[in-house]
Length: 76
Image 1 (cartoon, rainbow, N blue to C red):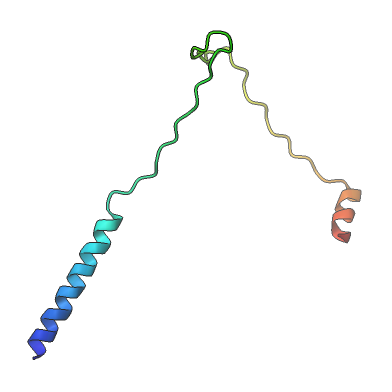
Image 2: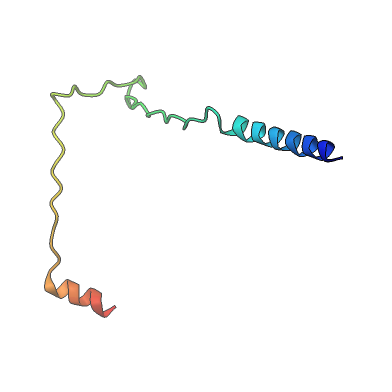
């Protein structure tokens, strides 16, 4: 009787583990496609400007809040 129970429980555990491993294996995030810009007159795809022709990105400047804006924030 104990052997039958042990075999039954063992079979259930094995099948559950297989199911879990099957679901988790090989999942990768989907890749997003970038939109291509089209020419308004011809409707054909336009090429992007070369890396040297593009302007470099501007640096972000952090601004310190003034005393008045900090006290206004504290009150609300």
